[in-house]
Amino acid sequence: MYKGKDEVEYANALVLLSSAKPAEAVRILTGISDSGNEKVLRLLARAQTEALNHAGASATYTKLLEMEIPDAGLILLRADCYRKTGENAGQWRC
Image: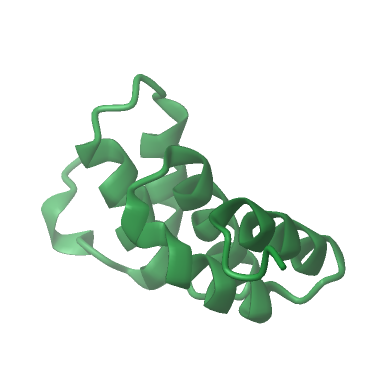
């Protein structure tokens, strides 16, 4: 009856993630992430990270940062993705 509702899909993705099925959670969350919902995007990034898709998680964290969400932790999470993928390695200077 409620299949397809974003809230139900989000809950299903949470269950899958807690059941160590991050790739399936990513598939579901990707389908509902176009809405730009912060909660969905945060869970998508977490699922992508657990599925070892660090480049995907980096892109999702970038979307969240572009939404100007006041959470400095997002920068650190994206930086961790950069570290794991080597993304933007040439841009950082010490």
